[in-house]
Amino acid sequence: ARPLDTYGSGGDSIDPVHMRRELETVAALGLPVFKIRARSHQSDKAIWCQKAAGPGTRIAIDMTQNLAVPSQTRDDITGFLARIAAAGVALPAFLEEIQGPLDVAALPGLRRELGVPIAGGEIVTTPGELAERIRMGCYDIAQPDATVIGGVGAVLDIFAAARQSGTAVYVHCWGAGVGMLANYHAALAAGGEMVEWPLPKYALRDALFAEPMAVRNGKIVLSDRPGLGARLTPEIEAAYPFRPEATYRCLVDPTILPEISWR
Image 1: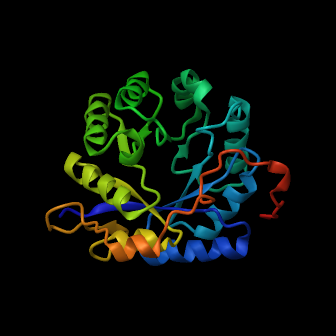
Image 2: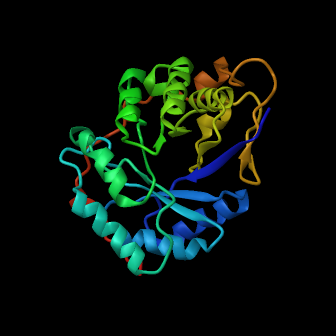
């Protein structure tokens, strides 16, 4: 199978000591881009990461506004980029999810203004909606996820819409092995050039791979065997039972988050 270029996705470390370990992993895998999470008040984190990464790795920024109501403002975003530029480091490889669901109409204008590629779409649940955002000019990089948007066929529909608009597609890949494989196969079938590799270790993800998967020299190569390359056995089901408390929580009290120095 054709190798897929890959970028690293993580950047959740709460301090420079642990973030440096993530950067070491990125370097060892040969990944050209490392995506971290940073909101508009965390420009120091973005600057530190780009300096620590060195010239061989570009930092991309997930601003995590896809569910935010209200979301950060235009001035928040431009101020964030201005502080990075003033620090003398490279601007982000791309900015992801810069505004929330109530501000989608503002994305085309922001995209033209900011001078940095804009990415998004991971939580859009229908191909029609994401295709419309692409036609509106919301994104330089669309990020469909087969586990959210309706399967492999829906992701292929997004690739088709993106080709008409000259928009890149980087499939969103997070979570367990089946979803990652579905997105990777869709990207391979549609001629995608870049996919996401989540850095945090996740035992269930690896258990669901029928064959071990790895990034080498910044690329992923899928198996040529029929099927997605996933397996689910009674032993895996027994080892990973459902836990009611293991739910995704969108509401976070910012007052309980630690303040970390990135200077």
